Amino acid sequence: MLTRMLCCERIAYPSAMLQLVRNACTNLFVGGLSYDTNETVLQDAFKQHGEIIEVRVICHHVTGKSRGFGFVKCTSEDGAASALKEMDGQVLDGRNIRVHQAHKQ
Picture (cartoon, rainbow, N blue to C red):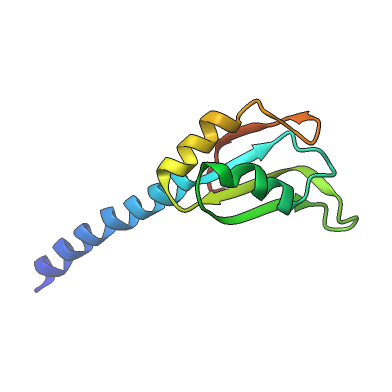
């Protein structure tokens, strides 16, 4: 019984890791944002590359002003790859943005 349980745990662990990797592949970090860029502007810029699940512009906790970066979560790896390729280095609200794969910290 113990051997069986360990085997099942080994099988479950890789699938959990695979899900983590898939999520990382659909999450994009967007840096170099104008302090005037809001989530609506960011979503409009990225939605041409595929369906977007979530957009977040990170703001200072006291002032509420943008910190100049955000995150975009796409529904598919293909959409994220397309957005990464096409949007990196583009001008958004007068600033050249940087787009990279987001990594959990």
